[in-house]
Amino acid sequence: MPGFADIIGHEQIIEHLRSAIKMNKVSHAYILNGAERSGKMMLAEAFAMALQCEAHGTEGCMECRSCRQAMGRNHPDIIYVTHDKPNTISVDDVRRQLNDTVDVKPYSESSRYKIYIVDEAEKMNEQAQNALLKTIEEPPAYVVILLLTTNGEAFLQTIRSRCVMLNLKAVADDKIHRMLMQRYQIVDYKADVCVAFAQGNVGRAIALAASGEFNELKDHMVKLVRRIGDLEIYDLMSEVKEIQEFQAPDDFFDLMLMWYRDVLLCKASQGQGKLIFQDQAHEIQRQAGNCSYGGLEKILAAIEKTRRRFRANVNQEMSMELLLLTIKENIK
Image (tube, rainbow, N blue to C red; front, side, top):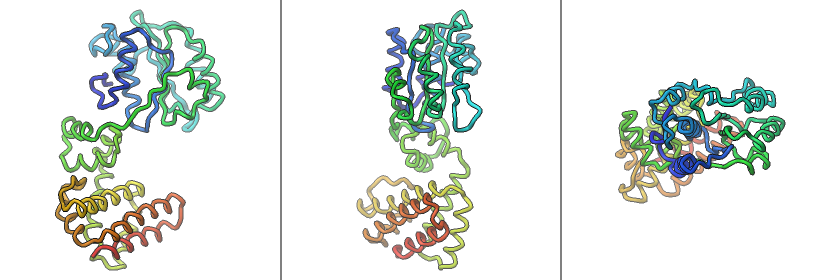
């Protein structure tokens, strides 16, 4: 479990939470709203550890008994609310794990708070939210509830109005890039692709860097776009079947968009722009010289159109065939 100092980005949220601790103005309920893997749990756990730290600072000391328990996720007064149903947090879950225990004071003598962390809180149904509302309206002074969600608008207005809403923002690309290289020893050009693909989401960048399937998909896409202009029609049909085996069409379309945007950037900047696929700069420059602006616009539009067809479950094999034919026709 990292402390605040180990978290990449989210400086404003961290400063807000540290100030709340320092000024002794900790709210009874927070909503941490952000995309999947954006860092909500890291922030919640760092905040919980700091609140319970026996050193009483604004950052967990990582050394006291309380911090060690928090890092091991076995602190008696940091409670993770769980749910058995995959898509629903029921009223029974909220009552049994939260409402029925809030009046029990912290177990540890060193604990100043009793902290509840509710991950995927947007899955609370209306009955569960109404049950939680009763606790949020009149909580014991020592209770802090952290609602982690990908959709802050999913909560009842009565809950939103009684919580401090903290919206996680995208983290700067250069910070994620530096982190991937320094902490995970990801080489420069691979970090570029992961950073561009993650779009400011640190957790997603880390997952992509470690994903063998993603790297295999990327390598396959690069191999395809390098030689697509020379492939015969029957070769394209074979490629469609190979692509479908990856079971990650959105990732494939995103990678293709990144490639042809690199080609467009190279063409527009005379090779001076910052490319995502830096290790393929020579091939990108070659394609930029052989493609017209109109042709590249058709390719980019075709990729987005094919993505929409996939999501609408329109004949996927035919849609992919048409995409590859469109690319082939516009690559000289």
